[in-house]
Amino acid sequence: MNIRIPRGTADVLPGEVEKWQIIEDKARDLFHRYHYQEIRTPMFEYTELFLRGVGETTDIVEKEMYTFLDKGERSITLRPEGTASVVRSFVENKMYGNPQQPTKLYYIGPMFRYERPQAGRTRQFTQIGLEALGSDDPSIDVEVIALALSFYEELGISNLHVEINSVGCPDCRPIHREALVSHLLPYRDKLCKDCQSRLERNPMRILDCKVESCKELTKDAPSVLEHLCEDCDSHFQKVKDYLKEMGISYVVNPRMVRGLDYYTRTAFEIMETRIGAVGTLCGGGRYNGLVEEIGGPPVPGIGFALSIERVLLALEAHQVNLPIQSFLDVYLAIQTEHVKGKAVALIQKLRAAGFSADMDYMNRKMKAQIKSADRFHAKWVCIFGEEEMSRGNVLIKDMATGEQEEAAYEQVLHILKEKIMK
Ligand code: HAM
Image 1 (cartoon, rainbow, N blue to C red):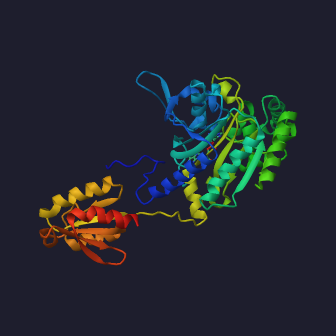
Image 2: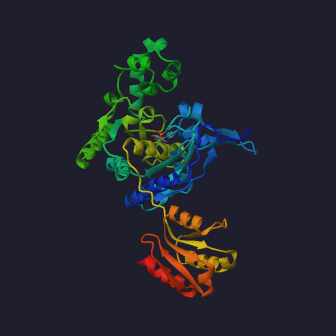
Image 3: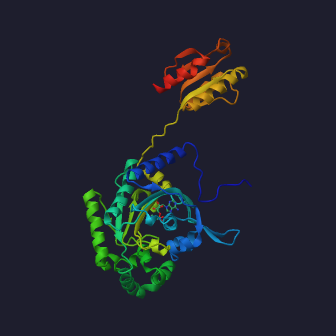
């Protein structure tokens, strides 16, 4: 049997990879404008990081992690998300001690979750994410939301749906938790199996269960917004005010709790309703307790992540064609073996001078070589013919006009430089 690609993964082939490059370039450009710096952390970490960071009762940790023992019998997990790793690095490298705070970091890289694959939900996916650590000011919550929206807008995806919520803090959450549990306890048997276990372990997650019967049972359940403490309430109010000031439309969804345990206060999602089940393009929020949880000082943080796979679906839904440009400055067409030495010497000089250049390596007929040049959108073709070479010359063909000129081999580099730079 032939070996196939693992389920839930994909090859990104030439023709498609250019779109990924445009998306990644856009993200980098935007992050630099908002003054975020790149961080690269390993693709695997000790499992404990995610147990503590993401939360032992989350779906990610309970069902979706790629966990294995390495040869030294240590439990290793392929990262299912980026925040825990960034926070680990922030603590390990004592970035909280830098005089300039907040620490604004971004990352682009693969994440791994053992999920049921479908379009926009893969087992290896590429997240673009950022984390701002060190400030509890609501204006940075809004910066993060605005940045995520600008990213989509600059790619040509606008009118996305923004939902926000506050999930409170360790002061107010227990009060909500109690109210929620006493509301749901009488209906325990009617909840789905997952929610029955959530009722004891993580009752807030019941609020965003997708099972219809659970949705019905939680319709009138107490919302966390009704139980926010004064500080959380005023934080949330300011986030809403600043969003209004920035002209960003949003909907408050008191049932949105997100699938990771580290969130405190602001939580948000950006959605494209036209792409159904995987319509959540971007998710994020504040995590004021995570740095301490991972062994650092009490430093607040906020961030988001989105995946390139879902950006591509959104581009399709919005009928945006990214401007993929692929061309060659020069293609070298070579008539015979005899003149090839001069051609390889020239192509090396062209590339060293900064131009894109390619040539025939298949010893094909001249006509087929010119066809390749056309297919590669070459601007110029240098024809190494026996006859011209016997005079020490080559032909330079302008592919846009079809015009040809014969030039001395020694002059070709100089002539092409002038033409290309024009
Ligand atoms: P998350 O909501 O788990 O949050 O994931 C963020 C985004 O990653 C989702 O909105 C979705 O676009 C994408 N995503 C998740 N799973 C898959 C998948 N299997 N296939 C394709 N795309 C996927 C986090 O990961 C948090 N770390 C975000 C964050 C950063 N919060 C604070 N800072």
